[in-house]
Length: 138
Image 1: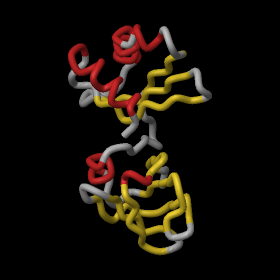
Image 2 (image 1 turned 120 degrees about the vertical axis):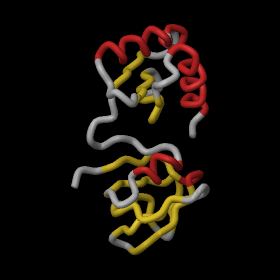
Image 3 (image 1 turned 90 degrees about the horizontal axis):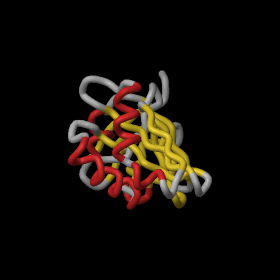
């Protein structure tokens, strides 16, 4: 998990404890994109509250807060575990078994790695190697 994501989670813990930060990433060097989830769903009002809670962050970045949508990002071991059996795309920082992108069914999720049944075969990818991952529509 990125340092910026850890920072955003800490900032929201007090004001919006039920909000889960699925992914926080800097895009283009000047925009911070934050995907959130909530047990009761993500509404415009919730996105506005989160935006206001991140006022200090808005001094450094243009801020985008949104729901995950159908191609929700997967950034934590519990995300991968929750969506076992679903199709996902996993992109790695460096080549794993000769590839940097894997698309297939999530078939396993341990504390250290996710296992995906991709076109190239079944591969275990350590979380530390994942650059970005998300569900894909079936």
